[in-house]
Amino acid sequence: MSPPKHDTIRLPAELDNLHTLKSFIMDHAGQTISDEKKCHEIELAVDELFTNVILYAYPDTSGTITVRCLTNEQGDFFAQIADTGIPFDPLKKREPEMGKSIEDSRIGGLGIYLARNMLDEMKYHRKNDMNILTICKKKG
Image (cartoon, helix red, strand yellow):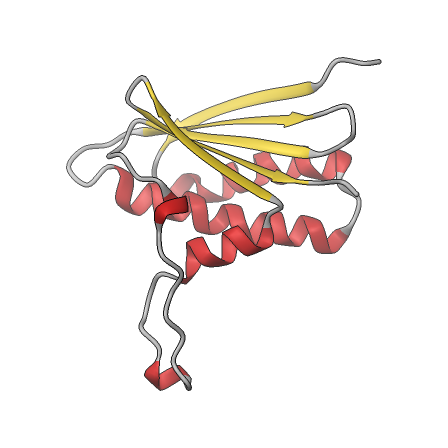
């Protein structure tokens, strides 16, 4: 058996780096996930997750985002997104209340909901003053 493959990138948490962060993840995901729909779901989810970190993790200062990509022996894709911003567990975020119509629905709060539904797994923990979110998209 071959060992799992992984790679890491660390960039300032700035909107200018959103494309680079997404490209980094999508390059790695595309090496193991050949299903175009699954890759698109990963891309939508990480766009929402990165945007949340960039806009909200560092309200009074600047910071970084560290991303580590990993593929296990079964070909499942994992990405670990870490920041030293304010503590925030996206898994504790309540699902948005959907109105009967668009006009009745509250604005905001859909990004995390969409990310949860686009991915197979999301796990959060805080360690050494870091938010660490691990996401998974299964190959099969």
